[in-house]
Image (cartoon, rainbow, N blue to C red):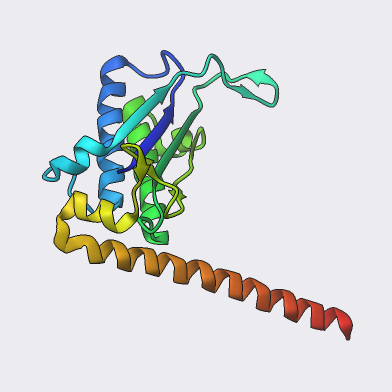
Length: 179
């Protein structure tokens, strides 16, 4: 059940290019979650994109002379791997470059992408909390509930490892400072 917030200044893109871009962004996010955007109609139906039109974008206190974009794809915790996040950011930048008809490096320098995971137990819809295993079962079938459980467990192990490594690093630095 991904959600996407996209900020595009009014008139930054030609209307047809913008329509194609918004569809492409939806498909990119569905694929980053591991689903086929072409064949998974359920994933398509629950992927919402909110288009925001900032009145203006400023850089260093002055109105930007070229469009600036921001994309915030949001998914339940456990859906992204580092590889999926990196691929998502790259594909979003490529899609914006195509939409503008510009060079990748030039357009990508004006785009920020913030792949965001909402912690399990904090994603709510239809008036209740919905957890990743339930979402996975909805999107891919009941037999895939265990995939959601495994993704969530993998993500939590990764977070725990990061905390543990940070604590060890802090201890080592503290020991070196005590010498």
